[in-house]
Length: 200
Image 1 (cartoon, rainbow, N blue to C red):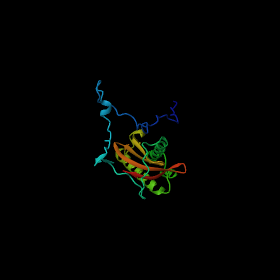
Image 2: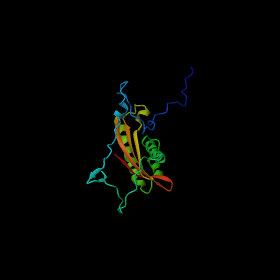
Image 3: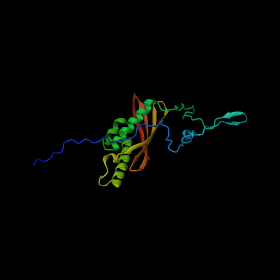
Image 4: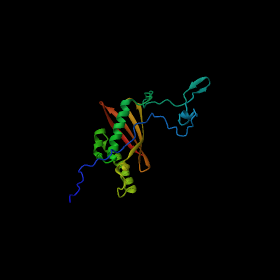
């Protein structure tokens, strides 16, 4: 009788860590009827456009003008984040996801931080503790397939308040629970460094 030997290597499908970047994607139109032509604008939420107030014939701005600490007008915020800024924010978030999903140790975030590495590492470790707590609560015997135990990105928003500074907010999800990770990146000497991370 010949015993059947199992192969040493098993092929498994690659897990889907997070969906493709869809920041500028149009919203789904699942409730739209066949000839309902206003469906594309019905789901979008636009911020109201501020209307200047007119007082005694002199128009005044509807919001205060931001100023710096010395009283001069602050540099205007950029209309949209540049592609370089979006790539840097996505790279930082990918490293955070690899840490949260167990592919990297927390210390690997140190290469992406500036002078306050300990505060950033502490916040990423707190996020890791939250993810591990959810894994223990929802899957104590590790009965779920590995792909279902991953922290995924629901949404990522990146803005560039001024040149060389990126602020990102990501909605992370695991087992139906969602929390936010906000971070600030600054470019110094051609490299992006994380200045602050907050877990909400």
